[in-house]
Length: 97
Image (cartoon, rainbow, N blue to C red; front, side, top):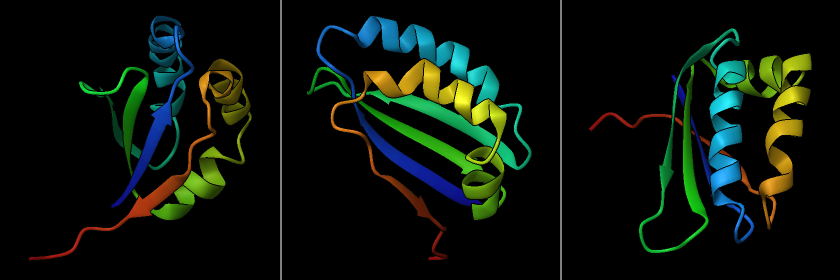
C-alpha cells in the first residue's frame, strides 16, 4: 500500500466551492483501479489549508493509472484552479515499527 499525501492551499474565499467540487471529484478517484481510500482534512489553524490522503495499492496505480486516464482530466478541471501555489504530491510507504 502506498499513501499519497498532499498539502492543498485553496485560494482565499474559495473554500466552500472547493469542498463542493471535491465531493464531485471524490466519485472520480474512488472509481480508479488500484484505489483503496481517501480522506480530506481541513486545517483548524490556517484558513484554506487542507490535507489530502489517498491510499493506493501501489505507486503505479496513481502515477500511471490515474494520472494517465481520461478521468484525471476531469479531476483536474474540477479542482486544479483552486490551488495557490500548486501542490507537491508525495508518496509514502509504511515503516514497520
